[in-house]
Length: 136
Image (tube, rainbow, N blue to C red; front, top):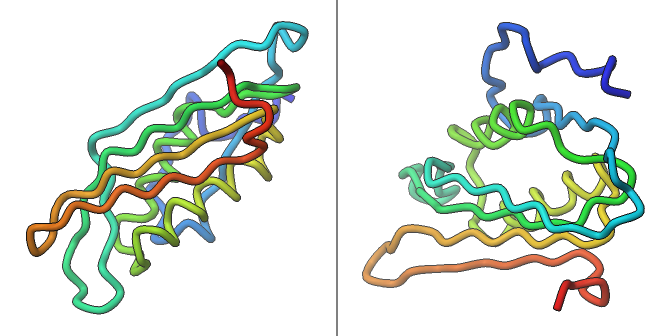
């Protein structure tokens, strides 16, 4: 499967929306051991679908891999594809969760988006896949 990685080690352009972006995966080298992977970015941005103004967020992705792990360069490009994508914050967090589940089929996954305040209110959205497998 790692031979299928097309983004890592190549020049790529950012996609204009998440429908065009590709999340890639590589084999989990220790599938018998449950361990937690945490990925964070403070540079996430998207567009408000009503005002067209940019929304900024700190995104944290935490998961327990099963057979595959997400390749981080493809994740970077995937997240950047939201830059000019108009969507509500809650919709984005659920979409990221769904796309990651489809790409890597994790044992457990949580995506948290802490969006910058607008009008004095900060919104944090959290979506979780298979919460019964959440680490203690």
